[in-house]
Length: 78
Image (cartoon, rainbow, N blue to C red; front, side, top):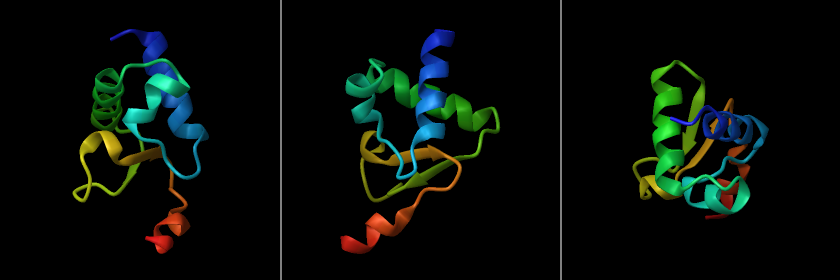
């Protein structure tokens, strides 16, 4: 995997308070959706504190991911 893409995804996941989906990665950091998902899975396997909001309820490309806790207060409006 391109280490530049890995760093972009990791930096984005650290920076987001509300989580970010893989479907948004092509627009935000120019990393293709499928590559973003693969990087997220690798970060999890490497022991990073990747949190997910909406997992099991949404397609994996729409799940919100973050490194560290996600402010899930937005979920109360569903």
